[in-house]
Length: 309
Image (cartoon, rainbow, N blue to C red; front, side, top):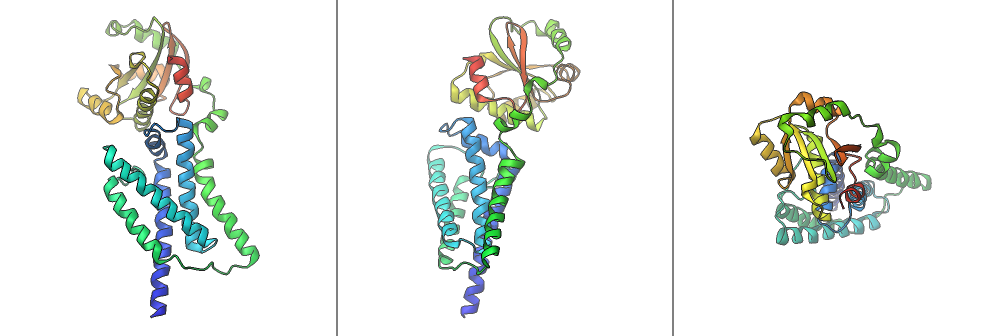
């Protein structure tokens, strides 16, 4: 009987550990969306939201590994319990006060409603209580240190090194290096179809995007959240969009929460020439002249606010 109980406890412990690791990996694969979800609560600015997203992923990987290999088991057990309780309380808030269709606990690849995720967490808490009284695996002194070191490396490297924050990425990649074709842009603005687009007075940000581009969708959602959280003037932001008919563009606007922004359709040739095929590209324009450019990574909250305030 004891052997069966031990086997069941081992299965539960390893299962919980694997679940946390899988959850972390799925968040990592849709990290941009997870950052934006945290940012959408309007508690942290975008930089701190990005840091929080990576910290959550790192903690999930760490506790998952420690539960499986049974090193520092009691601290890992308590951290796991605190995370589950904390996530559950957040889910209660989301269920009561928000209308989220996906809580992003399994990233964007596996969409889970907040109510279902809450049930999942409560089951995990109950199972975790069953494996509360476990002892550490008896590694040798060196083996224990190596196991701990390996767990921390495995937890920190993926979210912070392989998927660096935009601020860190931008230290090594300058936005001034983004291609921009001034001749093609001026030719588009001189076209008769653009006579209602006036960028001559003040500061504007123009996004050149494709309605079928995944990274354009992420950048537009990022823009929408930044504008909303900082109460920026939506009249100073517009999009030159190509690809898809009017229905596809409206669906794109709905998905990215950018209905408040003006969309100007342009042809694919003009779009490709203006940004040399780099989508999305944002043009920061003052009195009709392009002063600088940015892509998804270089589109920062600080720069946007400084430019449009």
